[in-house]
Each structure stands twice: as C-alpha cells, then as structure tokens.
Image (tube, rainbow, N blue to C red; front, side):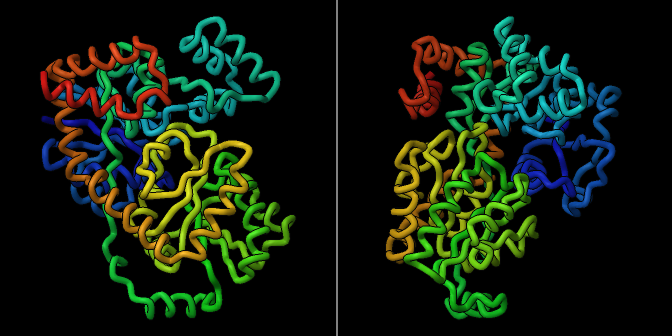
Length: 432
C-alpha cells in the first residue's frame, strides 16, 4: 500500500508537524510505503524526515496521483493547512481532523485576506441560508462563532474517511454528516523516558542553575497562549494563592498570542510568573523535571486533543484541566478536572492547595496519568489502527461501522448521554 501523506513539517511551529514526524511517520511507514507532500515554501529541517522519506510539493501530486492507493491529510485549524485543504477538495482521501472547529482556518483564508465572499460561502455550504445570516452578522459585529459551528461539512463530504482523536470529535463529525465513514484513533504519543528516574539531587541542581532553588511549588503551563486557555482565571487565582504560598512560581511555556505580559504586570506578578515563549524539546523536558504540577485549562475547545497534556502526563506530573471535550474523556484518577461554571475559581484554588500540600496525591495522580498514556496512546498501536482503517476504507469494509454509528446518531444521543458510544460500536463491529 502506498500513501501520499500531506502535512505541515518542521521548521513550521505547529504541533501537527511534530505529530507527523514523531508519532505517525516512523510507525505507519512499517506498514505502508509513504511519500510526504508539503508546502513548497517550506524547506524541511527534521533529519529523520529528510533521510527517510521523499518529500514533494503538494503541486506535484496532480501528476503523481496514480502512483498512490490513497492520500492521507493532516488537517488543523490554522494557515499552515491551506495547501492541505485545497488538496483534499481536489483529491479525496482520508482526513485526520486534529481540530473539530475550523473557524480559525477559514478566517485565515478569507477575512484575513479581505475575502468576505469566501467566508460567507463556507457558512452557506455548511448551514444554508441561516449560515449566510450568521456569517454576515459575524462580519458586521466582529462576534465570530469560533466555537459554535465546526465548519467541517465540506471537508467531510470530500473525504473517503475521517479520523478523529476523541469521541467528542467523532460525535461532532456525525452531527455534521451522519453518513460519514469515520473512526476514533487515540492520539499517539512517544514518551521520553530520560526523566523517568530523575533524582532529587538532579532536580535541585537544575533549580540552582536557574536560580530557583528556594521556590515551591513550581507550577507550569504549556502550549500557545491564547484567550481560551483561561489565563485570566489562572492568574487571578494564582495571585490569591501567593498569600498562602509566597514562594510559588508559575512558568508559562508557549508563544504569547494575547499580550499576557501586560496582564502579569497589571496584577504585579512579574516576580512570580515567567513566560518562556517557544522552547526546544530539551528545555521543555528540563522544565517538566522541576515542575510540581501543571495547569492546562481550555474553554471553549476546538475539539483538539492536547499534545501538551499528554506530554505532562507522560512525565508523571499531575495536571489540572477543564472538564470539556477530549479532556473530559480522561480518567478521573489521572488528572483533576475543573467544571466550567460559577465555581471554577474556587475549585481551581482548592486543587492548587491540594496538590501543593499533599505529595502523595501529586505522585498518585502523576503515576496514574503516566500509566494511562502508556496504555492508551502507544504509537505502535495507533499505526496499526491507521493501517486497518485505511485498508477498510479502500475495501469498503468501514461502511459496517458507519451504519452502526448512524444508528446511534439517529437516536438523538448528545455528548453527555453516553461517553462509551464509540467503544460500544467497536465491540459490535468485532461481533459482526
């Protein structure tokens, strides 16, 4: 089987490039012959990719399409995926939806370029005349429906199969297009085992090296700094927590998209909150090694599976998350979940104190999280699931699971009705 693999690649600063190069290509290539198709403006920088795969401009696929059994598209919610979107519309294949809400991508390709017609047209395709009114209102008011309308119907309609990394995602796909051929494959994640046995003396050495030997707790957060990461709530709670734990430090790793440093200055937290920006993997691991626990709130969610949360859990660090989307699917004993309601500030504060005061609880949650990632996010297993789904789509076998998926959808089940829908579908498929 020969696959044309469309994805962003390094040095593009996107988690999907890391995902493709680290979690999929090394493992799926054991089952398939793969060529990689990229944006021609990008020169690949990952030695593994360069040495092991032929990389082509996506524009070359037109003349090479007959060489492949099927294209595989890694689709995300930003401008890096423009060439992928254009390609999947022309050459239908299997699409991996890393984000379920794609307003950010649509905005980057329409309104950001002064093209309101494309913006309105996409809403019309997905939602008819009400969609046109919604788009026109969004343009006139600036109140964009980023997290209320997925805008994925055209992609689903042009895909022979769709892969999501969560049950949340697959339910949204079926709500947009009940006839979709789709499946859930847990996001693969390769664990870095270097820090599994880090000693206290090594941690103390790192702390001394960076001048933080007299700090506790060290709390960290990872990923793009954006409004829906709830930093306004986190910083407000953290400021109050400092009254109880005056040596606490909050390290934020990620590119600042919202000018968070201004908020930090406003709250007079400069001596306790550090924004590190984009860091290399080695530095990220070093920061995790000195971390006591992590916070990764997110609301609303675009339906993404968080690579940064998997990274945190794989290092055995406890993490506090928002109880929404994929995050709500995590086992209750592997993290602490904050409901998005009027009590969230109080709950976050309680969780903060709990993890600071109780090392046994920190260690237990961290250990459970690590075990969960090892058991459920193994790249070897994910590659086999990828391969089987691709085979099933090519052979038409996946229509069996699709029919069962449709029956669940027709029952009117909602996100909160049954968190085990897809696992039940899988069991029924095995029986068939």
